[in-house]
Image (cartoon, rainbow, N blue to C red; front, side, top):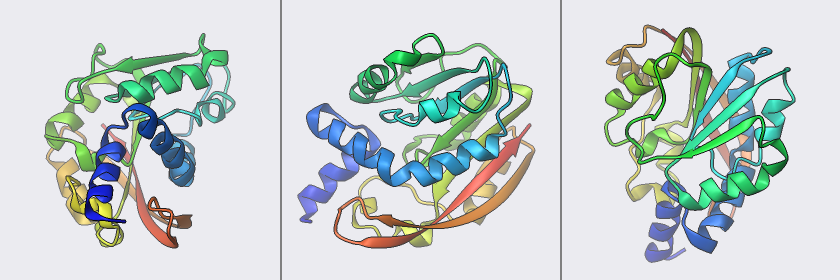
Length: 216
C-alpha cells in the first residue's frame, strides 16, 4: 500500500468514518476477534454483571458476551459515530441488554463504581493521556471489579506499516510501568500468539499480544 493509503487506514483504525469506516469495522472485528474473545475469557463474567467495553467497533461480538451468563447488561462506548450506529444496527435484537454511548475519548460519562467488568482491545495506542484515562476507568469500576486491557506488543506492532501514523506503542514493561502510575494496584500479564491476516490484506502474520488483567 502507498503512504497515503496507509495513513487513511491508520486514521480509520483509530476512528472509523463513513462507508470506508464500516468496511474497516468489519475487518477489525474479523482480525481482532481472537484478542477480543481472550479478553472476554479473562473477565470471568458471571450472572447479573454490568460490563463496559471501551472502543467496541462494530460490536458484532456482543452476542458472544451475552451468552456467557444470565441477566447481563453490556455498555459499549466509542469515539466513532459510524461504529456507534453500526453497533446499534448489528445488535438491535439485544437492545434490552445493550447500550451504546458516543463520547469524545477522554472522560467516561458514567457514575463512580458502577461496572463489574471493563475491557478494551487495541485502543490504548490512541489514548491522549493514558494515565488520566486509566484513572477514569478506575473511577467507574467497582472495588471488586476487573479491568482487562489487551494490546499488540511493540516489537510486533512496529512491523505493521500503518502504525507509523499516530500510534503510541508499548512493550510489556512500558505498559506495566504506565499502569503503575495510575490508581490501579494489581495486574496479571498473559502473553498470547495467533496467526492472522494482516489489516493491509496482503499476508498472514504471527501476532504477539498481551492480555493484562488489572485490579484495584
